[in-house]
Image (cartoon, rainbow, N blue to C red):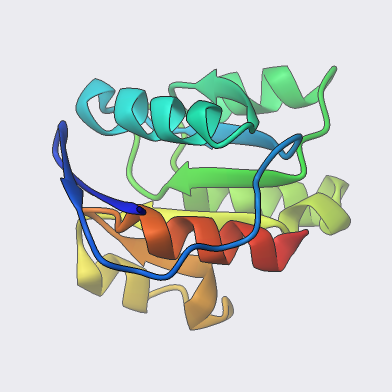
Length: 139
């Protein structure tokens, strides 16, 4: 049964089962341990190969040697947030920029992503069933 992430607590929700994330390469770019760790655990349990970065700069460094299928990026992080990471990827790796999903606890911040389709933005707390559905749309 899919789960819902609320801070560092996972809550069961009743959502129909979805296709598998087995083998999906995901880069999670999130500075908050209380969000990042449960996301990584959930994705790994679903069979995804997960890499972690604590901000956009660390993500760019990892992307020099790795090419994930999907990037989950928090919008607000120290040094470089998700919007700046996305802008840089658009200039250097547009195909990869097209596979970025944004996370934010601030709905107004998500609304500022006017050039990004709404289905590419997830509000925190993250509904893990919804996250899984959106990740599978990118594959």
